[in-house]
Structures are given as structure tokens and as C-alpha cells.
Length: 171
Image 1 (cartoon, rainbow, N blue to C red):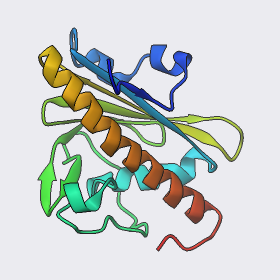
Image 2 (image 1 turned 180 degrees about the vertical axis):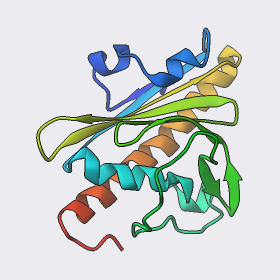
Image 3 (image 1 turned 180 degrees about the horizontal axis):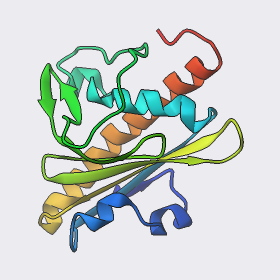
Image 4 (image 1 turned 135 degrees about the vertical axis):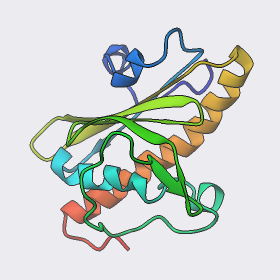
């Protein structure tokens, strides 16, 4: 499908994700991934801040409010909590969490799993899989839209985690 894959290897798309168990026969399956030059422990706090803002194109999905550029020390995410906040509204919910390893949520009928996969001591892969039951044509449009927004989100999280890990300002 158009836009179903960005930054992923064949082995990363063929692995199991927690969201796979939540949607039977999904019409939409999309994978996104990015290498981050920081350990998973430095990336996890940034990923969990998705609860505060989308970290994508703020002018589109956050009504122009900038996603936080500093860690605010949130507690670990819990199942049942809101997944994100956009434009001041809490959206979605967290359905599974393994602190430091994976965060799975649902929003607007889609389920998504973020996986942190350590590589070298100071590098890791942040993987995202999105699944959804919908019709085939809607899946194509959703896949392309998600590609644009999820790519920006992962690149923003990468940038913030790397700068923070290196002791550079994230503003």
C-alpha cells in the first residue's frame, strides 16, 4: 500500500507488535522507524510526553501550540490514561505499556505500538506500527496522512532525545 512503510527494515516489519493482537484482519498496517543516537532510557521520557502534545506538525494537530521542548518529569504512563493532548483536548487512550520498552494506544479507531529497540550502548531504534480496520480506500488515505504526521513526530522525538542526551539545549 502507498505510504505504508518509512525507515523500516524487512525484519522490523515482520516482527510482532502489541497492536497486532488488538485488530483482527486490519485493512491498514503502517510501519515507521528511526534510529536515535541515544540509549532507550534517554528516549523513553520524550516518548511518554506524547501524552502532553503530538510532537508532529503543531500548526496542524495542536492548533498552533508548540509541543514541549523540555522534559517535565511525567510519571510513567498507565493503561487507561489519555494517549495524547491536541489543542487542549485529551485524545485516545493507552492500552498497554511496558516502561522503557513499548507504549501501545488507540486513537480515532486506530491502534499503534511504539517499540524502543536498543542497538549499541548509545543508540536505539524507535519503531511505530499502526493498525486499523477500515475500508481499503480509506486505508490508502490514512496511510499517506499518517506517513506525513508520524514521520515528523518520530524525527522530532529523535532530535529532542539526541540533543538532551548530548547535554545540548532542546529549545
